[in-house]
Image 1 (cartoon, rainbow, N blue to C red):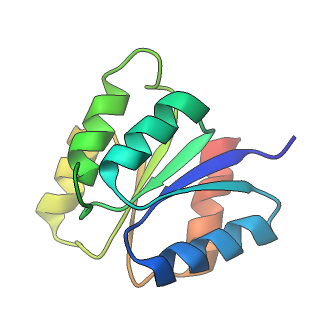
Image 2 (image 1 turned 45 degrees about the vertical axis):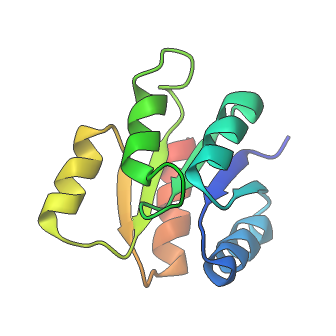
Amino acid sequence: MAKRILVTEDSPTILAMVKDILEGQGYEVLAAVDGQDALEKARHEIPDLIILDLMLPKIDGYKLCRMLKFDEKYKQIPIIMFTARAQETDIKLGTEVGADAYITKPFDPEILLNKVNELLK
């Protein structure tokens, strides 16, 4: 059975690109366009991994990551922060809220796939 990945991204172009890359590798992709939608899908679908943009409508990526990582039911789900924010303080905050990895945009598809594969092993 294919591993399920929840991709949370408010840019339709980037969302479609990431979805194509992951589905091309045999992953099932769930999509969310804002933090509230992502939280509901994460709780209902319990994906194997979450790729999470930081700058999202409704609930930002940091808050969403914290909510999931500090909940016993969901803390085991690996989360990749996926953002254009590349400052050291942003990366540090991502680590503090429980992110398992941090990938900056624009991104290299190979780096993203390597990190996804590593976290799903």
